[in-house]
Length: 365
Image (spheres, one colour):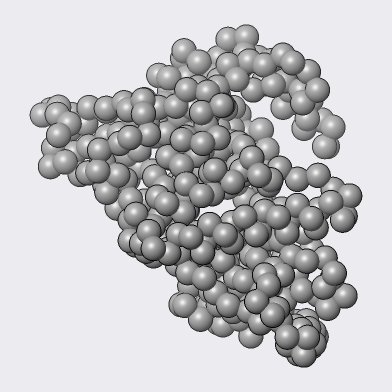
């Protein structure tokens, strides 16, 4: 149990330098995230620790600082990664900084820290003291994290993350013509023998094998589709360890949250998979793969529509398309919610990163 100052009420933070956190800390972190209206799957211990154990091992040195109240309740969790960031993709020069553990490679959105309202000022002060010694590069933070930023934070970019409101039901989304098109696509695919099914998050180890196969299926189908389009992707076999670890960690909680799939099949063969994460009342659509030979029958659009229907059928309120402004998302009446990236500069590394982002803004402007 962390001691508390009897006068100020300030909790003493404890820093962990390993992903092997005590069970009561994990439970407290989950409970804190579950009660935060701005939390996402990417702010849970399942995402942060799985990322640390896989991709993060090559990215830098992780740490997780935890505040606990006198009664043992976890009231703040700040996961950070000490790493280096390149000043240009084609240049070897990289500078040191601290960033959010779990952001960057792996494409996490709505990143940030999980902090109870009564600890926000204290955590903001703590981050400010860290920023006096090293540059903070905080990418893709949820908009609700603004109050935790130290003085001197400069915005470096915004990332639109469209999301659809499911509360009126899936049949209320899109124009009348688009809904008619979806029904037509569905009839044609059904005539070809294609069926759809939802695979919920695992709640035990006995359910992991099927879901692991689906992870490999979506990776394979996504890679094949991108190759057919002549486009590169970072969602490849190198990402498999992260997503397999996510399956294991989520299943171990038994909470029915985490990785889930919408699967399209024909004659027992998987021809399409949409992969994402269920968390609280939201499904976050992370990636998709489908057999390009079914493009004339709009299989990709149909898979997304079926995933939206399945999410709404389970009582979820939001279908989060995550980053990217692809036009199809707005056909489902998605509305942008922006993640914001910030730089708190310190020393030479901060000055160089500041130049990088100012140059980037000038090019985009």
